[in-house]
Image (cartoon, rainbow, N blue to C red):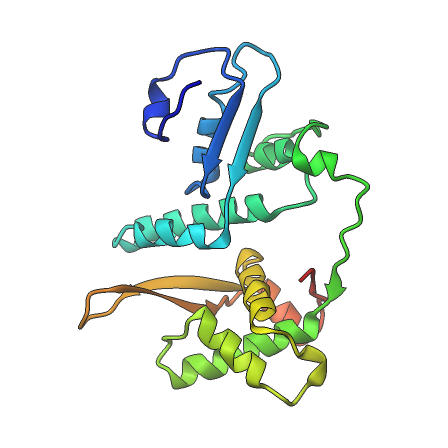
Length: 224
C-alpha cells in the first residue's frame, strides 16, 4: 500500500496501482484525471474513488488567485469539476471525453453506468427556484451584495406567501447548493477590508438558464 498527497503522487511510477482514493473535491477535472491516471497503467481493472462534499469548494475558493483573469479561470474549472462530481446520469468516461472535446463510449463500469435503471425521483421545483432567485435579488439590493447562502436560506424559511414552497432550512440549504452546482447562482469570495478575513457571498448568475427559469420557459427539477 502506498499513501501519499496529490503532490507526492507525481513521483509514483508503478504500473500495477489498483486503487486511487481521494478525500475532498479536486480543483479541476484536469487534476482529477491526472490523479486517476496513476491507477491501472498495466491495463488491468482499477478503481478511483472520490469522497467529496459541497463545502470542499471553500478550500479552493479561499486559495483562488487575487488576479481577476486567473481567478475567473480557476472558478470556471471549479464549477466544471463540481458539476462532474454531482452528475448522476452520464457515464464518467463520456463526461471526461466531452470535457477534452473528444467522443467517448459508456464504460459500463463507473457509478453512473451501474446506476442505469434506478429511478431518481426529481420533482418540479420551478416555483422554489424562482422564489430563491427573487429572494437573492431582494437581499443583495439591501445588503450591499454581501449575502451568504445561509442568509438566503433563513429568509426563505420565513416567507409565508406561498405554502407550497415550505421547506426546512436544511432542505433549503441543499436546494441552494444545487442551484450553485447547476450554475444558476454563484459563490464569490471577498476579503473584508477591516478584518482581512475572507467571506463567501452568493449572487444570481446572469445567464440564459437563470433567465429561462424566471420567464417560465424552463422547468426546474430537483431531488431534495
